[in-house]
Image 1 (cartoon, protein in one colour):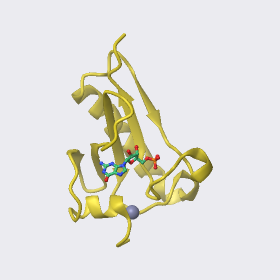
Image 2: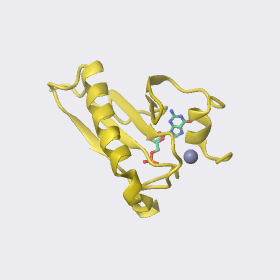
Image 3: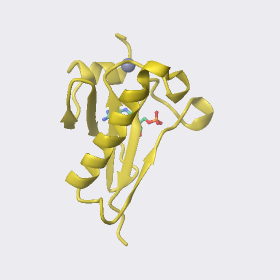
Image 4: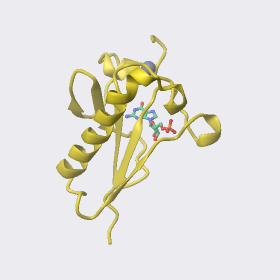
Length: 109
Ligand code: 5GP
Ligand code: ZN
C-alpha cells in the first residue's frame, strides 16, 4: 500500500520512533500523544480496521495484545495501569486506515 502512512513506516520509507519490531508487528510512539505514554502497536500486514479482520488474522490480533503488554512493562506502566484502544472506522474516530492498537498510560495517580 504505497499511500498508507503506516505501511511506509513499516517499510522505513517514513521515520518513526520505533520501540518494538518483529516479523509481524511494529510499534512506535504516536507523533501527537494523547497521554504521557502513547504507543501505536501495528501489524505489518495492511488491514484496514478491526472491521476488516478475517479468521486468518486471529493469531496476529493475539500477538498485538501480547506486544502491547510487553511494551507496557518496558514503559513501566504495567503496575499503574493503562488503556488499550482500537478506533474503528470514521465514526469510531479512526483517521489512519491501517489497523493499530493504541497503548495509553503514564498519567499521575
Ligand atoms: P486513529 O485516530 O486512526 O485511531 O489514530 C491514528 C494515530 O496516528 C493518531 O493518534 C495520530 O496522532 C497518529 N499519527 C498520525 N500521523 C502520524 C505520524 O506521521 N507518525 C506517528 N508516529 N503517528 C502519527
Ligand atoms: Zn498500510
